Length: 326
Ligand code: UDP
Image (cartoon, rainbow, N blue to C red; front, side, top):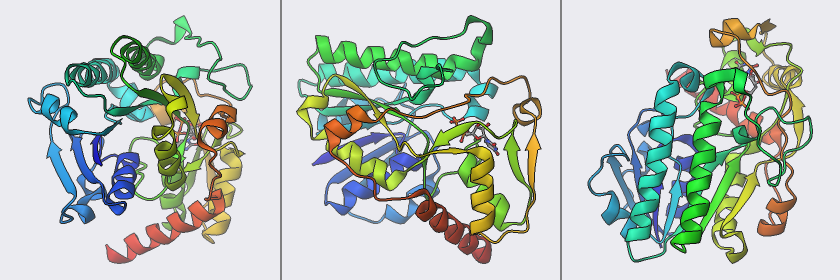
């Protein structure tokens, strides 16, 4: 099979690439390396079934040809991460929306129907009402919060394009609402909490919990994610559907910080930092982000193989090895 991954040097993209190369598929990654990092895929570059172009999805002249080559496409290219979204609110809209549309238009014009998975996000649920988020929930964007929601808006637009192309051009498309994904190669540079806590703990630096730390998240190991994505791509039933992808074990940031500290035998203290200090301005955090996974289980039949403890053990080991090598 031929697999195209846009944003393929991002952390999730790199794991999708590895999964498919291990199965013998030919994998073509494109990435402008603005958020993605070539270090994530450097180790694969000499494999015969690996291809890579550093290009901008908005302007790359070969996009149409490459889309027509692919049996399966994972559209992961996007400006992501809370820090980036707050710092570059226009870029989030002007990259994420036309990038997705250009890809879908190319697929529609290719005369060929590649299986397409489009990355959306649990951000589209906004604040929610304290319940586990289900795909059928209404989406409410607060007017007062201005560009805080630009990422969510860009992903709502991508979903709308995806559903519309599936309907009008009969493309086999599935929209994936990713919840917090974690694992090796994830960078803390753009705000992601777990790699930050692990790096801080192994360096015996303070663990920086934002706000009061009682906000909760559910973390899914990326190695579970890629297997679930493959199952979704192989299912006819998931075509033209929106699906939550994640894990539903819930943990507060205070508990997470304590867990990382204990598991790494770290001397770090756990400090609380106000949101204004962390994000540079008043920031509306999501208090509770938990997926309803009924649809996920129905469509994939998948059982998670990675516990949060196993992921953290792995990340601590990798972070220690990195320190030793530097
Ligand atoms: N967070 C934190 N310390 C950090 C980075 C993030 O306490 O150093 C918090 C953040 O405010 C949020 C949670 O961890 O409540 C998850 O943040 P992340 O950016 O990883 O994911 P998202 O907020 O997009 O779910």
